[in-house]
Length: 60
Figure 1: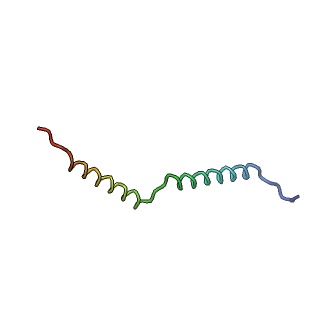
Figure 2 (figure 1 turned 30 degrees about the vertical axis):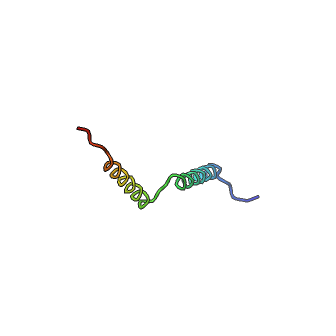
């Protein structure tokens, strides 16, 4: 055994931080998108709305 005392609170907090970090990394991989991806998706959606509007019939 070690001669130095072990701070169990520090170990518990370190373990909790590691678990939160792992969960955050998992969520970032699952839901995160880069700025370029968001911009591209928004541009594609805008183009689709525009094409749909061009095909609308106008009622008098």
